[in-house]
Image: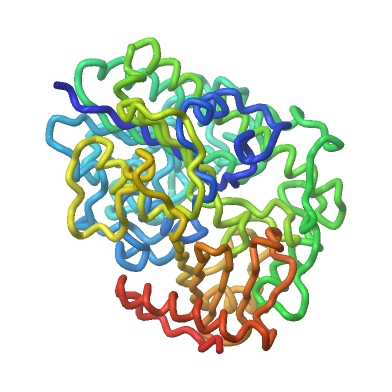
Length: 481
């Protein structure tokens, strides 16, 4: 009997509320809305760390970033740390397409024999200088269609992300990956396959062929939009908000509400662009009569602030940055589509997917299978989730080059979001944060310093320290109470 296939799709920097199932009735996402209607929607899914490489390490390996050896961005995943592709039986064909951001960007590795690279931005992380002579598959696609590179990177003419983002829809990365993934599925109708499709969009630069698709007047904003963090919050948050609110990013004046909305409209446009690509892939599954035999999962490596708390980007522990969409379709379970309530962590993705494929998970994995939850035999009512920040070598935005903000970003912190919906952010020094997400879902009232919360702070701190002991996390945090 043929084993189930796996189609593992994820975007870069997509916050949860870009889909109808998370409350957005305005954005056009028909393919992913249909996927949500036909499967499981995880109500509150959280990343392991709100930045690309560490989060992707967890999504690929089932290990925490500090365990996988990828504590920060642009740190290659060690060759001896296995990915999900290396945990599957030998009869699986394994393919990876799109952004990797875990070292040797465009070269087949970690058990994926088919590799379709899309990025030239991480060339400085290649393991061998001779590899600098090779461009991504997507670059060769553009060259074959008569486009000329507009930039130079380590001695090679390359296409910049700004030029790529200005392409007509048929030449965008999203469209290209959809075509290649659909082709892969059609070529593997008779063998079990595991295919990962990783989109750059809606990650910056915030440009694309659908820039004008959404009217600024129709964009919804929440109570934290353009609200700057107060003096009772850590310096890093105040610095980021101050710098962004006084800057121009991606050609948009963020000193004005119109500027923020313009970035948001472009962001939505690129999210819709991904949806159109995903439709190509899901259509190929249907045309090959593989939908009933394929586990499909869709998520993102982290979210995007998009003006909430006056911050653009990720790297903070606000919900907009750490909470992501998570859709899962598993027809072989014969369960009705439903919403999965409670907290879910990406640390449980790899063991859950292996379980759905009928493959025993290695003992080294640090999460657990949540298939019993999908089957209705268990729930997530008591599930605390934990999130890391292990420091950074600087914010990717040019406007973030100031020494003070980079020093602040270098400080590790840890977060617990309890099953009871309380969030505690503990740093190595200085102020912490405590939010009651039940009554304050937009995290506008920091309760950390209130004497009435001392018992709760001790409880949540204890949960964090217990987790640290269980997973071998040695970061020393301040005592909250």
